[in-house]
Image: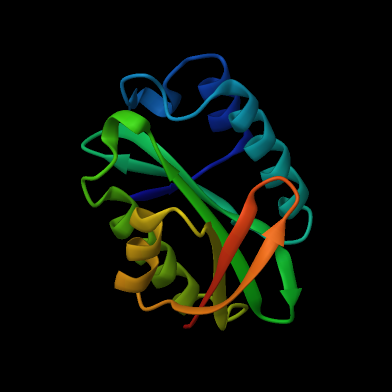
Length: 155
């Protein structure tokens, strides 16, 4: 299940606390510097597009985050990112979260296309996107992340 993430949720996670009475996956969901980056990204994207970040919750536990990683950059196209706590990976959580995010996108009149990028070496993430109907549309090189596959799905 996705729960819209507010700044207070990011603040709680950064403080090592569980937001809204939820538990947090063993080991946390991400390193503090990544959570801080995602918090700042949500604030930036939130200036022009809302909602833009969600907690991934399973059985009362925050197990990951998913978000728009930039504002709509071509009319009605949004790019998503997602991550699941290391202790909760390989359980279908990312697949379900992306499916839920696509259901949101289909219901939002502002969105017609959803894109994503993955490391060319991240087979599990490729399968998450393929299972959810994404098609690989190209490749690009990123200065920080290296070679990436580009993905897209019409909603």
